[in-house]
Structures are given as structure tokens and as C-alpha cells.
Image (cartoon, rainbow, N blue to C red; front, side):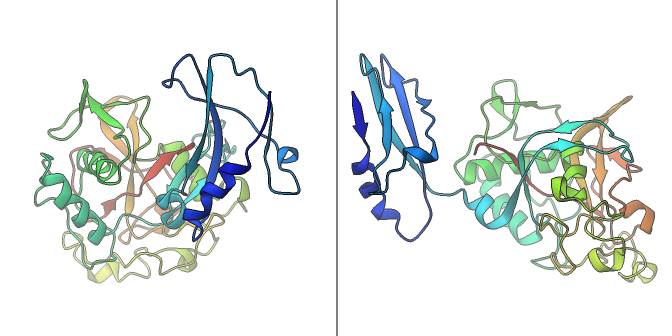
Length: 315
């Protein structure tokens, strides 16, 4: 039988102030196994009706899933198309898939809001973290701290936490967490994802730094942050996010300001994790998109290391 889905379009009127996305799905035998039914542009008729084609309706159910756009992607992040890292990379030849990454480093203000939520739910993050102002990147957070914080933000925003210890959400201690296969929550980017995004992804102009060959245009580092006069242990050399130019993808501060934790371990050092991007206290060379010189113990908390969020595609 051939169906017209005109009634489904009228149901969207409640969301008239924002864009929504429609997905036709079917389930066989019960209501518990929904699968997407692909539609093409030629199935949208001039009168607004969707021609869903011919379906075998025997023992099948159909529904239209109406989704508002993900706030993280709409407001705070960019979707990065996948690709392969170039020959001048220390990760040359590694490929990444589609993923979303935040335009900005996590700020002190955002860290505190999620931390309050987290502590009330059993996360051991009470008193963790520091920042010079609400819009400065959070600092003095370990790798263990930030992956637990990612889980708390996932819970806070109604998504599935990524990091687990056994069957439990990772909330306390210093553990090597596993990744939940079904999770759509917040996480750290892998090192390859981080570098691919810093280079500008498929839009890359092959810049030395993230978005420019002139570090002063895109980043805060030792030479322009007052690093020579700031005590590295005070941490007051970082600057508010988004004060410099963006890179090719519209991302800020991937060169300089503050090093960023990545997910990856370091070969031969299983409790160490990669950091990328350079900081306000770094030489220019450490702010290059290709630089992989710094990694640290996952439990370290420094004035020059923070992080930014990522999410998987298909959110």
C-alpha cells in the first residue's frame, strides 16, 4: 500500500520557531526495534506531501520521529567531516570519522555549573578546578577529573554517559574507564580528531598554527600573554576564550591559551595521556598543529592544561 505522510508535516507546527528534523522509521513484529526508512529528495511532492513509497505493512509499524536540533551542535560546536591526517603529521595516515567538537575550551563558569550538579550525584569533583574569570578556560583539572565531568554533563543534558567502570558510570577515583558502545554523551576528542580539527579538517589551508601561519593572530603564548612576568603556578596567563581569530572550521584557541587533554594513552606509559595545542606559557613551537611534544600523568593538575568537548556523529 502507498502512503502519503501529509499529516506528519502538520504535526511540526508546534516547533515553528526552530528547525526540526524528520525521520521515518519502521518496526517489525513489535514496537521495540525501530529502523530508519531512507527517503530521498524526489519523494517530497510539490504540495508538501511526502511520498513514502510502497511498504509491505504486514506485521509492521511506522512512525515519524521529530527531533529538534542538538543544542551542543547548534550553539557550541561544529560537525567535522572525516578524513586522513597528512604526511607532515606525527599521526600521518590515520583516519577519523565524522564527529562534533566544541568551538571553545570549557570555561571556568561552565565547569562550576556542571560540577555542582555532579557533586550532588556522587561525583568526587568537589573543589576541583580553577579559573581566572568566568570566561577563562578551566585549569588545574586532571584527565580523570575531566572524563568524570564529561559524564556528569552528559547526565545533566539527558544524554548517555560515555565512560564506564564495569557496568557503572565512572564517577570516582582514578580508573582506566571503558567506553560505552551506545553512548551519545560528551567525551574528550581522540588525539587524531583533535589534530584533524585543529588543522581545519577538509577545509584546511595547511597552516602552521590552527587557522594561521601567524600565531599572534590565533593564539595566546609566551610571547604575547605576559608569560615572562607571570608565575606559572599562579595560572593567570590564560585569557578569556574566543579573543583571537578562528580556524577554517570556526574553532577558537586550538593553538595556545591552554593545553587540552585528549583521550589517548601514550605508548609505554599507560597512565599518561596526550595533551595538545600549546598554552599561554608555551614557546611558539609547542603551539603548532603538528606538535606532540607534551603528555602527562593522567592524575596531574596544572595551571596550563584544560580541555574541550567532543561528541560522536549521529547525535
